[in-house]
Amino acid sequence: MKKDLLITRTEDIVYLTLSILAILFILVETLDLIYIFYQELKRFSFSEERPLGLSGVPIFFNIIITLEILETFKHHHRTILSRVKIILLIAITAIVRKLITLDVKHTESLLLIGIGIIILSISMGYYFLSKKNILDK
Image (tube, rainbow, N blue to C red):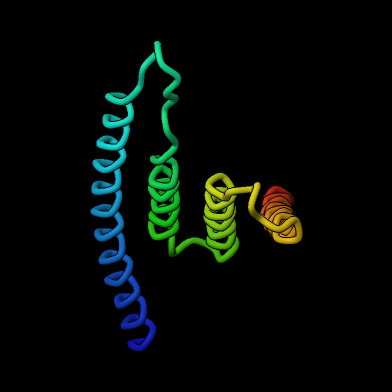
């Protein structure tokens, strides 16, 4: 019993520490994203062909992924099924982030097929876990 209590308390302390660091990371990344967006707006012009850049997209997805990780930390005492679903959502978000920033013109087709299979597999896993959750209710 004492061993389980010690492990649970240690987990709680680790989750709290990681949550604080994640919140600080989100704040810094948000400020960075605001700064980049401001710089892009200063550079933007309707009269010339200067579209808004996508340099802030990776930062945006970093924030989204970190928020999902925080969600996982918040519910770390829930069932294993809900934790796995959240982890799969984080994986999908991370892979899609990489896919958005990937230079498709210079990427081998086999690699793109592999990424597609990974996304499909993780999505199917999430779907089946969600179906199981509906059936259990």
